[in-house]
Length: 561
Image (cartoon, rainbow, N blue to C red):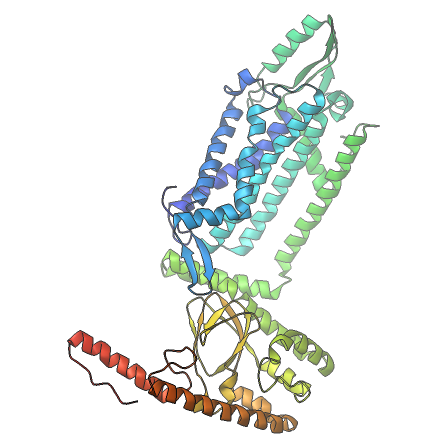
C-alpha cells in the first residue's frame, strides 16, 4: 500500500488506512496522559513484558507507516503554465512532503517515543526523572495529524454538520475531563506526601523505616496487579531516601485506576463549575495551587465555549453558515441517492466550499444597501479601488463620479469557476482570488479583462479565459455596464472621448495585424490573430481543411490572404 502513489480524491485503501490512523490517535489522546500521570515507571527489564509498553510500540509502527504513506500520497500543485493538477510522481511527492511543515511534525511525533524506550535509564536525580516523565507527553503532538485526516474525510464523505457539532461538544467534554484529571494526577505524582492524595488517604507514608522491610514492601507493592483489573502494572510505591539501614520518606499509593477515578471526579466538578470542595489543593504547596488555578481557568473557558457552541447550534446565529451547511447536506444526500462516483463527489464538495465567497458577496450587497451614500462610497472604494484604475475609461478619478463607482459595485455579480473551465467573453471580469490564463498572460488578484465590452462587437477581443485554479471573480455584462454609464450624463462626454480613442487604436492594431499575417509574419509574437477576427476565422478554417486532408491524404489549395 505504501509503494505506489495514492490519490486522496478516490475511495481507495488510503481511506481505510485513515481509519487505522484515527484509532491510533484516539489511543494516544486517551492512554498517553493516563500512563504518564498514574502508572509507575518501568525498569528496563520489565518494559518488554508490559502490555501498555507493547501497545505503544504498535502505535509507533502505525505512525511510522503513516509517515511513509505521506511519501506516496498525491498532492494538488498549482502551476502558472499547466494549471492545477494532482501530482503522482513519487519523487515530486517526496520532495513536496519534506519541504512541508507536516514532515517535521510527523518526524517529531515519532521521535518522542524515545522517551518511552529510553525513559530515565542512566539518569540520576529526582528532577531529571521528573523532566523525562513530563517530556513523554510530547507524544500528544501526534494529534495534529487529526486535522489533516478530518479535512480528507470532509471532502470524501457525506457529513451532517448539525450532528457533527453535537458530537464535537460531547467529545470536547470527555477529552477535557480526562486531560484535566491526568494533569491533576501528574502534579500529585511528583510529591504525593505533600499533595492532595495524602489528605484523602490515597497515598500513605511507610510506618516502618527499616530498609530491608521497606524494600521488600516496595517489591510486593509494585508487583501487585490493579484491583480493578484494568492496568496490570501495579501501584506507585517509593522507598524514599535510604541511608545505611534506614529509609525515610517512602510511601504507597492506591491502585492507578482508583487514583484516576478520584482525579476524574475532581475535573468533572471543576469543568461543570459544581465544585463540592471535598478535594482541595495542599496548603502551602504553591505548585499544586497554581496547577489547580490553571485547571479551573481553562475548564471554565472550555465550559463557556461548549455552552456557546450549543446555544449557537440551537439558534443558528449565522444564517450564512446555516445556508451553506444546508446546501452541503442536500448535496451529500443528492449524490448518495444518485450513486455519484467518489471522484466527482470530491470535486463537487470542493466547489461548494470554494463557492462560499459568493454568498459573502450577496451579504455584502445587502449591507451596502443599508448604508448612507457617503459611507457607501467609502466602503465601495475601499473594496474596489484596486481594480478601478486598471479599466481604461475609469482610470481618471477626477472625471469618474463617485456615484458611478457605487452603482457599478452594486451591479457586480460574484462567480466561482473551477480549474480548467473557460470564462465566457462579453463580460467585464475582476479577479478576487485565484489565477486565470487570458490573452497569453497570467491574470491574478485584482487583474481585469474584458473591459473592451463597451466597444463595437467587431473591435472586441472576445477571448475566453482558462482557469488555472479555483477562480473567484466579480463580473458585469456589457449591457448592464453601458446602462450604468448612461445614468451619469456628467461622465458620458469623458467616456465618449476615451471610447473613440480606443476604437481608433483597435482599428490600427487590426489593420497592422492583418498586414503582418498576410505577409506570412507573426504579430507581437502571436501565431494566430486576435484583433482581425475574419482573418482568424479564415486561418482556423484552413487548419481544419488541412487536418481533413491529412486524414484523406489529399492536397488542399491554400486560401489567399
